[in-house]
Amino acid sequence: MKIESITLREIQMPLVHFFETSFGRTYSRRILLVSVVCDGLTAWGECVAGEDPFYSPEWIESAWPIIKHHLGPAILGKNLASARGCVALFARVRGHRMAKASLENALWEAEARQKNIPLWKLLGGTRTEIPCGVSIGIQDSVDQLLDKIGTELGAGYRRIKVKVKPGWDINVLERIRSRWPDITLSCDANSAYRLDEVEHLRLFDQFNLLMIEQPLWNDDIYYHARLQRELKTSICLDESITQARDAAFALESGACRIINVKVGRVGGFSEAKSIHDVCHTHNVPVWCGGMLESGIGRAHNIALSTLENFRLPGDVSASARYWKEDLIDPEVTVSKNGFIAISDSPGTGYRVREDLIEKLTVRKEVLRPEV
Ligand code: OSB
Ligand code: MG
Image (cartoon, rainbow, N blue to C red):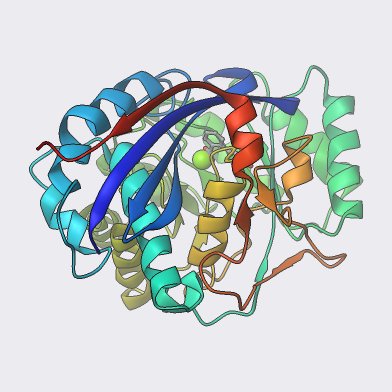
């Protein structure tokens, strides 16, 4: 696979509804897209770095220059045997996994299309449909949240996850459980609590939650292991797991019983597959998280979710929950019983709408091999 050029683009897309977590509220996304020309074929990748460095240290303004100055030059003009080949070429750059993932994932898509096979098959997936859940942000009132949950249950989603933070947690979970005692329910704290709040966190145990996601510090595993010993509710780690070694440490130390794999957070499909495999070996289920992706990243999340150990519903949901118009055709839709059907077409099975991307682009830069 000869890498001929890389184009960076920033696009801006307003969300249909704001999304609020314990670290802040987002109304509109600024998304870094990459397109890689490889043996004459153009493949796309999405960088999940946020508008601000609040979920992770990376953000759009760190990802852009790291690709321009380091990751792009590491692969431009090179001939790779496979998409995976970029991992070794990127290894000298420490961290910046979201930036790395955008390029690596584009290369996997290119490889699948060159081989004329679906991306999910190239990844080793086996599922022909994937179960879907939704992640619902903090709202202005609990009544609004209950309305939203009702809508999503009506649409067929198989698991509801709500964002929590101090002051929006026990009271909210009580209201949800009194209306829906039996739904599959989980919560995500995005690092909003501290270990000295263990008595408060123990109150979550009364709600029969599938999991509590990332209660403590974003970079911690050790104290999560201490906390997990104090809770009945399973801890799921998201932010803390940036690589397969973290997953092994977390499982060996008992820091969690479930892992959220985001291919954009962990540096790309190669590392996501390794995390999947580590968890499989420990018989620990994983699920696919989301980062408010456009259809480009969403299509990659869908392909990843076909791997066998993605045994729990993911945060991968319909395009229309996020966007008035998505960047792919067809848009992602979810069946009445909460599944996404997997396409057998080569690549992701979704066509990228380059005309629409062009209209939404506010910044663009083309990188070519140095001559
Ligand atoms: O923690 O999973 C998270 C969105 C942005 C940043 C972090 C997270 C999320 C979500 C949204 O939960 C998942 C989605 O619907 O894409
Ligand atoms: Mg999370």
